[in-house]
Picture 1 (cartoon, rainbow, N blue to C red):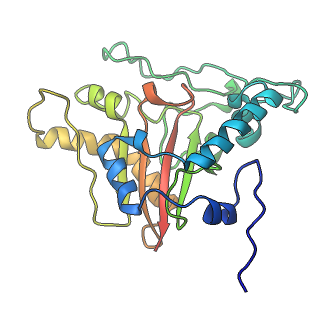
Picture 2 (tube, rainbow, N blue to C red):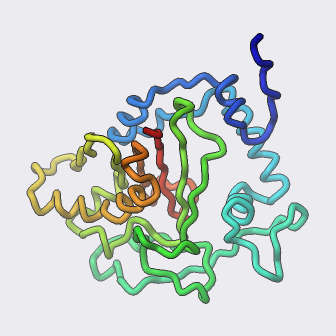
Length: 259
């Protein structure tokens, strides 16, 4: 006798709902290909889940003021102050405090990194993201509304209060490239991320390849530390600041399949 269908809710779907109602549209190989190509707009939610998600976003925005406030205050727990707690009735907005690092990007002729937010000065934040960053500056959350990927692939997002892409670790020689394409990589497999060149660029020299590797190092190590490659195969990416869904609140995506 077959089991009955799981009840269909309206909030973030359960694993049982995803498996029963939302047949994956993309294979694991397709996910990796899309991460490597940089054409991430092709990774989407199941159409039925997208409809459910859009309704839920509208409800959360009505309760919390904005979906950003919900994310920062409720899911991340980074926004409210002692005198202004985030409650459904308060419509509390995230607490944003700009914190400038010691590296003056203008001297390098580079764009100023996005403001680090939300922060309070007492946290004494580091200048940029590193693999061993203190836990109060980073949080890993499961994507409550995952793309239409195989059920054995888990989609997580790591959020950080400080920049991931920063002039202190991205050389001026490759800044425009990283600014355009972001960061991405693979762990737990033989697959290697293919460096992308800007139009008109010559073939990469050993120096440029090393600079690209250096720019990816901290994030790549963070993924390895949290998804050990003897247990997980991953594909990960960090959008450039211009494409971040919440400007100034850096984050990266990790698709992980248990070995």
